[in-house]
Length: 237
Image (tube, rainbow, N blue to C red; front, side, top):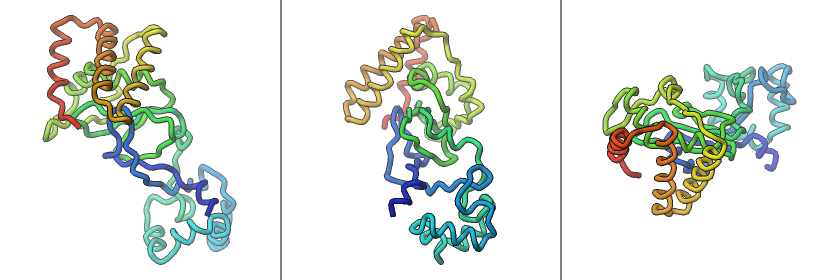
């Protein structure tokens, strides 16, 4: 049903986000915002009438969701919207459509992906909306990863628990417009190299990013050596 396209949004799980780009697995979320946040044709109607209008408006999705397999489960949910087929209230739906950086909670290497496709994701991931690509380059640098390993809780197999309150502490050094443009360009090149399967080009672009970031933080040779030593212990993809 062509109408279903209005509600089907590309969806990421925690394991789908990798360094530079998401690895999209052709999954979709049925995004039906709560009537508390958005006015639907059925909003404000008694339940029976609202359900009938829902069927008329999105017949394929309504038949799927309100059939015997899912109906009872939807009704029993504690996190439903005004109507049991709606999602719970959320004030930041529009932010998912902005250019954003998506990052994980559990990482054994820097894994920040830049998204311009409006992906929606589950609560195993965080995102920063409305930021330029150069921030993604900074977050994926050796320096930022070293910083996180110093402040986050260590887990098994070289993973860290990078809770949002820790990631918010990553320092963003001052940069000129030229440096920001260079980093943004390199971030885009890294994403392209990752998607095309060109590890040599990817490594070259990442090395250029680290060189710029070292200069921004004014690191000395010994400090760079320590940072790179930690980065080289990362588990490869």
